[in-house]
Image 1: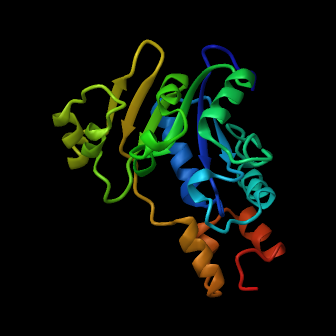
Image 2: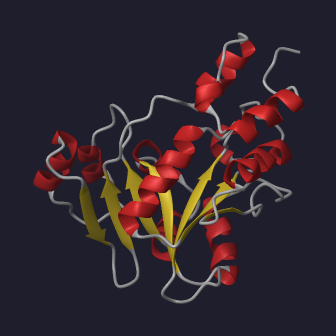
Amino acid sequence: MSDSPFTRIGLLGGTFDPVHNCHLSIARQAQEALALDRVIFIPSGAPPHKSGELLAPAHHRLNMVQHAVADLPDFTVSDVEASAPDTSYTIDTLRTLRETVKGELWFIIGLDAFLEIAGWKSADTLLTLTNFLVLSRPDVPFSRVASLALLPSLPGEQLHRLDDGHQRRLDLPLGPQATVTLLRIDPCGVSSSAVRERIRKGADVTDWLPPPVHSYIIRHNLYVPR
């Protein structure tokens, strides 16, 4: 698919350790809510916020995402972070992608991560480089967004309506070129950590993973005790 200034593209980053069915559901709900032409999955290389955590090698995590979306033409994968030699920062990723991907970019992020954005590298600049789609997370209220000093004054009543389920979406213009959209999505009970734990215990994860990803994990003996 060729990009144009009228193309809307979602950017979904993460460790994807491993990618699972909820990641695909999140991407699909984001795509439908914003009428995205495609979603680019961006597996991380060495994420700064998980510097002390043991992750599966980046090439395995990248390959698993590629297998997961192989038959989904509106989902693609970028190795911009997985192939980076150093720590991957979102600001650098976005600058790189803006040079190569044409269109209106939407960075897809969970509410829990967005609430920590003030601590990210060049956070002020980051909020001018792309639009943000902030997705609901269990037990994390949207009302907490009002405490972010980087954002303009927010409508508290509408934030509470999101939390109460009376409103699904709220668009917050950040300026002439950027928007933050808050979106309630259907909850999903699967997490990468839970997948890894079940594999370590020898429990079944068939229903949690795309079949090609499940096969890849078995073939490469990932997440089992050494």
